Amino acid sequence: MNDDALPFDVTLLDKLADVAVGTGLNVQPGQQVVLTGSAETLPLVRRIATAAYKAGASVVTPILSDEAVTRARYSHGRDETFDTAPDWLFSAMADAYGANAARLHVSSENPMALSDMDPEKVGRAMKAQSIAYKPALEKISSFAINWSIVSYPGRAWAQLMFPELDGDTAQARLANAIFAASRVDRDDPVGAWSEHNAELARRRDWLNDQNFAALHFQGHGTDLTVGLAEGHLWQGGAAEAKNGIVCNANIPTEEVFTTPHAGRVEGVARASKPLSHQGRLIEDIEVRFEKGKIVKASASRGEDVFKKLLDTDEGASRLGEVALVPHASPISESGLLFYNTLYDEHAACHIALGQCYKDCLRDADGISDDDVAARGGNASLIHVDWMIGGPETEIDGITQNGDRVPVFRSGNWAD
Image (tube, rainbow, N blue to C red; front, side, top):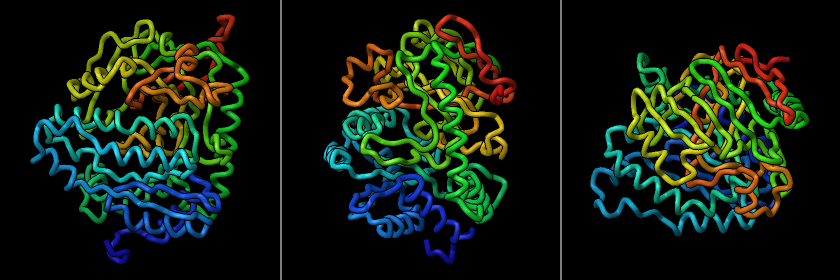
């Protein structure tokens, strides 16, 4: 789309590109960048490429998808092909990351793009892709490289969020929400991010000093004790990747997060917001954990999709992340449901099924998969976040001696 036809202030796309490259990735001179997104994101992709080259990037390689092409596969592809993925592409990505390329994804996908497609085919294709992507994902989940995600206001996404508005008005409203959440609607976005990162670091450091054995969540039907991995490490905001580059993995971000113990989660968790997954909306998720594993699961809508997700592999029904987000976060206070995990997870405390982040373990450099598992870290082909927090959320930290320390009260930090 021509810039002149975009129904929002395109100068803020320039600021978003600068934040994505400078604060999100922190691209270094001579570094390659792998840039992924949909064809619709080209106005931002082009600006990101320009900003990256100005920062000294050697090569920016864009890899673009298209919703119509994706839908064509599910409409006309032969049944036997849905267990196939482009291994060659993901192997090349893994090679690029192994050679220290940075990775940036521009999110704009229509959350309901596949809602009318055969969920069996979608599930098989996603599983095949997860298997093929695992070598590349390992470089990301272990924080071996600097990587980040930003968003572009896709039109179909906007119309899902604001069905009462015409297309232009809906897209403009989503654009404004993205610019505000990404702090690029301010006079000094870089300075705003510096202040925000400092506050997240303060929360992170306090949690690391506490070294809790577990967290106890209550509220909105949730009564859940999440044991924390041995030698867990809280992260949040800007962090140094193993290649020595400090970056912000998510733009926006409001969370501090760590690795739970895959075998020490007990109780009931109830979702406080819908989960958009594989083109389907899953609502009112409720699960029961015993010895770390989900033994009972239900949802008022999309239950079949959720249960297929849990059956992906052994680790899919265990936790790989627990994250704390105050109800007073700007994304929460916007009152918007984005149908996009990058935003909705930063509106509420959340948990993630599946793969853990190895960088949320102390002294994890070079650690083996067996050592990760021994410390309680989970392994899986998936990593899917869903929200359990809200204005009534109460969280206690349980110390190594069994004492309780207030962490959250009425949905926000207790201090």
